Length: 319
Ligand SMILES: Nc1ncnc2c1ncn2[C@@H]1O[C@H](COP(=O)(O)OP(=O)(O)OP(=O)(O)O)[C@@H](O)[C@H]1O
Image: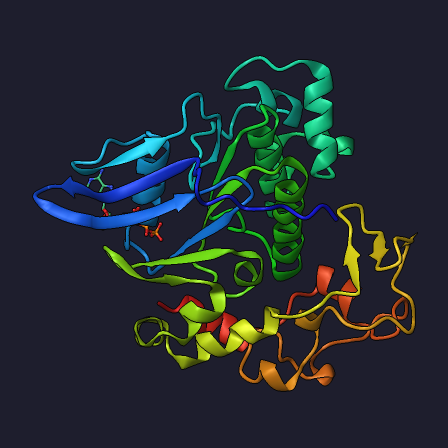
């Protein structure tokens, strides 16, 4: 896979001491971060901690009341907001969703849908899509205009655990192929962490920042989310020997693609219990779910249909 180099010296967007005042309060103040080409920056923090507000300030949807934002001249932004004003009573196909905000040539619609594994659903009604399919369609819409900066506000909302992993894999591959910068907003302290270059932990201000590993160790982070959330990070510091593609096939390390996992495949570590997973969202004992016949280790395919109880995942969401 293409290795993307991040060039922090020439960021796409930089926030300097940004503050936003609402109703006499400062829900967000002193926010500083930047996103460079090829970089994935993830904003985490409890509800109301200012993640969306900071992201909106970054892309210029919202003007800060304090501080300033520098954006690269001519910056193209692809934005998937947390909430979308869609009239769900009206029929709307995926293809039409792609052009709601502006015209797009058919071949670019097709290319964007193909890149998120949604080619076969161009004519599908948006209201019938699953949570994961809907997020993929929104992602296709955001990348169709080839943005320099992709801003995704909670892209895994309404998506089950397997779908979440697949979406994060997709986001990573978009970054790797397009080389765009990505600003991600998440409550989830698990999957994104491994793919993220820089985590910014917000709590009305920047609580702490760093690589996923550094943030997880900081006392401020532990105070906010608890030690168990930190432990779950290890779950995702791992190596996949195969990847589940959007169409259900499996891409192996040697580049081969098969319909199913090989019987002797190793793990997606996040699908299996490990010592490091203790208390982690994936540390479900094998006995708590059925093993599928199509894979030697058995877990993956079933996960697509039967997401499990993930203790620390839930715990970490309780913030
Ligand atoms: N237009 C507004 N008027 C008043 N208060 C606002 C406005 N927009 C945001 N806020 C407040 O600012 C704070 C930060 O909101 P924001 O949506 O940025 O948080 P968040 O971290 O994205 O939250 P969540 O995880 O719940 O989406 C909240 O307390 C919110 O109520």
